Amino acid sequence: MPRSAPPRTGPVTGRQTGVSRVSFGALVDGFFFVFAGAAAVWLAVLFFSESLSLGWGILWFAVVFWLLVAYLVLPRLHGILTRLYVPDYFIGRARTSDGLLGDPVNLAVNATETQLRSTLEAAAWTRADDVTLGTAWKIVASTVTRRSYDEAPVSPLFLFGRMQDFAYQQEVRNNPARRHHVRFWRCPDGWMLPGGYRVDWLAAGTFDKAVGFSLFTLQITHKIDADTDVERDHIVASLLAAEPAARVTVIRDFSSGYHARNGGGDTIQTDGDLPVVDLRGDP
Image (cartoon, rainbow, N blue to C red; front, side, top):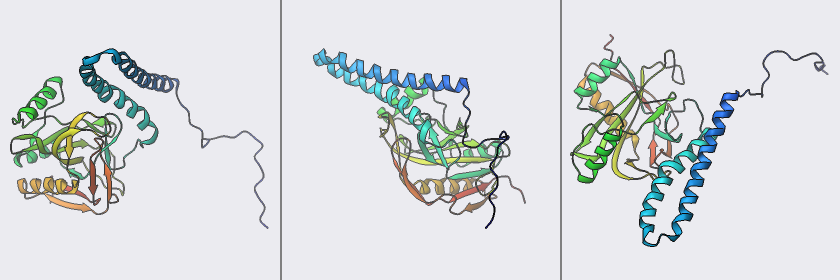
């Protein structure tokens, strides 16, 4: 019978597993983050209780209450909860500013920024404006009046802990509610995809089919088409048409095919393949 190792009697050295160290600053940050969420909920409850004596003013209250819940309370609650259950590492999905899982990462590109931008513009893609108060108001007005806004901004999504570097879009029939759009993130130096693949850019492309309400936050947002693979293939085809020398390789089953929902609550589905478009023109 084999002998078991004798128990350790001396001091334990080296890194101990199962023990995590949390800095004082992180604790303070977490406290105020949760406190802000609780304060937002309290404000909504207080606002609701004070509105019960408004009579016809309840109509105005309904609008203000929706704004409070949709743009303050629910985003704050999602921000708190997603810190607990959403992994903080690459899983092939972008994240919303509230921490919710967003659109699937469904395209990779090898190119300099200049090569990528020039090819997109040659393929009739338009650079989306940054989100500001002015551009946000402009897209609301253009959607209501059904006036074209080729450079309409897209909402921020996050990968590698930061917002997209830029986004491009193609408006459909001069209707800002319907558009092809794709966000791009530059990969960190030395970073590799699962499986050891090196790429310069990752992207998430989806098709906006209408404007509606987010299932998770009740905010007004674009609703996307469920079949994200169709949009992915459209983007690849447009790049190849603009740059015939480009090469495409496909990482099959990069992620498992799945049905899920994005950060706005829209159904999404994908076969899990990841095309890698090479625009560098290397022999």
